[in-house]
Image 1 (cartoon, rainbow, N blue to C red):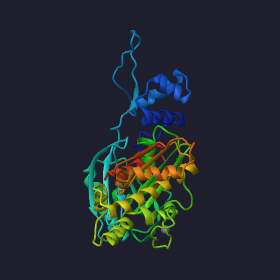
Image 2 (image 1 turned 90 degrees about the horizontal axis):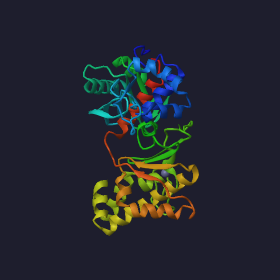
Image 3 (image 1 turned 45 degrees about the horizontal axis):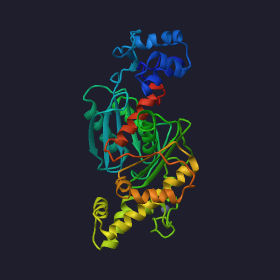
Image 4 (image 1 turned 90 degrees about the vertical axis):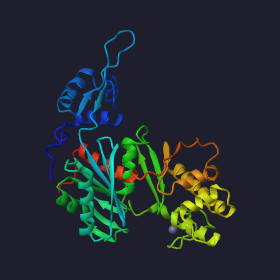
Length: 383
Ligand SMILES: [Zn+2]
């Protein structure tokens, strides 16, 4: 469907650039905005007029300049202009968030996924959307999932759902009547960090996630790097420790075998002689249990090796570490840093490393960010 009511649809390319600059970096004074976009102040005034008239932009409180000059009235986007739904879909659960135009989370909700056939999953997603929006139509709905997605609608492959070639975007859009965008969950997380999070002030960054698997994403020159194998988890089998345990594919010490939550608690159970959860292994290591400490230390060191490899090859300005298993980077931080140092050129610049603690809204917010991007770029899938 074409969302003709969207205030973003009629914008000229220049107006859109202005609105996006303010959305991503606002509030901005007019002089600063003109400088950033290389526009003259009269041109900027002419371009912002219709954006102010339609409510996309507004003037924020007066800021008085010292020395009694004219008061500055910085421009900002009205973040409450539209609302978006973002959903992280796994094989067992759909976790949803309602956000404003800047991907700030306003509400959360979840639905269990009991059967994985597309019709039942669409039922659960539609219930989640209506639960989050309570009759107030969102501008768009975004869904992120582990797997390969084409054209923001077609799920080509989603191993956790056992799906091949399911047009989830079309099914959900028909069901809810809302514009719908589907994306790989890690790509969605990258876009959220790039526009609204810890990647918004740099032109290149990488993110590494650990949890059920190991994921990696890269933004270079302000663009997300994608390829034909995006979404299949290429980084998961990156070799890290020739003496480490094997993954199901038979790789010794690959990233999945060294860093996935399951690999770590399975190893710990063998060494400790009883079943333990991932968090219990971390608790034991933090409390000084030598067996748990050895497993966590070795994994943290391997994580450092992986971080250094990404830094050495791609040279991003910043590296973000996150995911459900990221507490490993806190508990084993010293050995993670030792792993990095061991694999870096001694003269290399120190890494700008940020650990983003696990947050249940992280992935849903990513899916919302993709819905926001497609909406403000007026490039939603036509269903
Ligand atoms: Zn492997």
